[in-house]
Amino acid sequence: MWKPFLTIAILLQLLPGISEAQHPEPADQVKSLIESCQFSQAVNLAELYLLKDSARIDLLLLKGRALAAGFQYKEAIAALGKAHNLDSANIHVLNELVNVYRQTGDGEKAIVAGRKICILAPDNRYFSLQLANLYFSEEDFGSAVLILLPLYLADSSSFYVARQLGNCYNELKQSDSAIRFYRRALRITPYDPFVTGKLANVFIRENNIAMALYWTQVYLAQDSTNIPILKQNGYCNYLLIDFKSSAKQFLECARLGDSSKFTMKYLGLSFYKQEKYDTATTFFRSAFLSDTADAEICFYYGVSAYRSLAVDTGLVYLSRTLRLLMPSGKFLSTLYSELADANTSKGNTDTAVVLLQKALEANPENNTLRFKIAYQYDFHLRMPYEGLPYYRAFLKNAATGEQTITNLPQQVSYADYAKNRINEITGKKK
Image 1 (cartoon, rainbow, N blue to C red):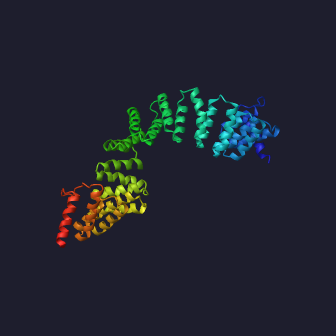
Image 2 (spheres, rainbow, N blue to C red):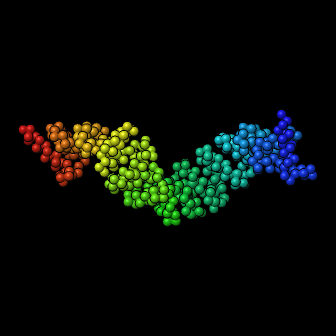
């Protein structure tokens, strides 16, 4: 039992700079061991001295610090708790408790200790900021604001306080206040990428895409190689239907080494919207390989593949999309329709007509599908009488609802073609 203490006694004799004429304070000896990362020796030495005087708060504090450094959190809290019982107004002990509670993930107890410190030292900004951060970590953003606002009013030149207020209001979905404090932070420290990104995200959330684009452009004029801001700028251009600009920005991200799913997806979409399907396919493939459970990417990959004449690949991934999820009616209808087109290209016209019927079932409001079913029966399957009811239904819905002006490759409108074919089919029947 006395072997550890014997070791410490020998160690004391060997400590550099210590002779019989020199007797460092016990606390200094323990602190020296902690500074040299000899945590277990520091604990043993502190306990040795505490046997002589168990009320030494400085030694209990150092013992707790050494135990925490050695990941013995339960024992550290016990030592610090004893010190706190001896002197409940000792800020150093309370602050060490805050640190240990944070390390153990016990945010609630860290906050309790932090509040006690702020009561003891109400004018100390460091401790107030620490408490605000504890509230933020625990997602109590309202309480964090109550601490940060007086600090901001006392000193509005603090970038950190303005930024944290912006973060709190952002989490609280109070966009106007978040924008105010993010912009204040940028006046203090212009071109901060974190704040610029957060500010742009708030504008995007509020559907003010033009302002989000503006702030990202302001930053990129200063630093054109920041990938997160480039991505935001590209995304804003995409939302504003400027697909050439969005493709340019996302291509720059890729050139700088960004191969993330987000970048590859929106590169694909930017080219897809420009009907450059062969280029889009490459990027959708990269995006899908990074997340094979993303049905949306799988769908666009399939569509781009078959539209760029890789019909087999298109069929594989459009079919896979169906297995990934059961989409909404309109999306499911579009999926069946695209699958039908791909099967028609492959020569599977009987499968295609079944898929078109499924598309119509999923979205009966899409009148064009009635024409496509009729045309599939009439032109591809050579079964005009089967298509006749769909031609008639198409014209009936076109007359009472949305007019369809789309033309066939022969430059004949759907409506004119349907009328002519009805007359021809019924005429033959007669």
